[in-house]
Image (cartoon, rainbow, N blue to C red; front, top):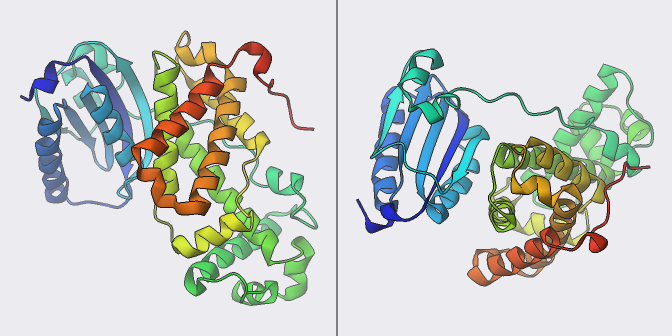
Length: 349
């Protein structure tokens, strides 16, 4: 084992589901590659498998364990990556890393070390996200709210066709609402009944993507016993950088235009709701509870604004250690702010 294995360690347990069906030889080959990589990083643990569901235990030096988790959270082969346990400074439960599989969790759970047995299995469902169209109505992008299920389905089809057309054509200026209505197999008056123009559909599509990322962020942060503000800030910054660098079907040039034309918005109401849900999902008594939702909200807003500005200059700068240090400073400044300097969360009007 490398010398780093003797350093103070972090124990991280998370659940994921394979995005697509994998054969058992494919899974075993992936596990073999992971075992070699983890040995080089001083990471021990287990990969527990039941069908397409996995529980991974990673224990080792804090930095490589955290970096590994961020990479897996954005790996296209994984879906619903959810934290089960994040413990700092304890002892190891394993001396190596291997794959264990069984037909159900009831078989695997008793085989795990007692401190981990309770976490070997699927997590509780995430809280339901806010109503899909609440933010759209609030921001005035809908001319008329869709009430019936058929009307809501038509609007979702318009948003889906807008995203598909942008990814295919790679440009915003050449498309019109009439083009999207045709592609969605709707009459133009039916589309115009709900949205005034193509820009409204783009904004709604971007906000739907943001809501999806916020759900992933909540899953990434939940149930983690952060020892202090610095650990919470590092997790938030690493997730944010990975999200900003994640490839999208739109391509870099079109993403730049979406940012430049302010289709992507850093919304206080969304940051408030996300911060409250994250703090509520942390273990009672953790450092996150002492930090509170208002400070976390302020940090998310500040960091989101800085990341947007960096992406407008050169998104690749997010890979630089100096940029990560800047974002950590921004986030920590908010998390450690005195009470008088923190805006209080309040329900949207």
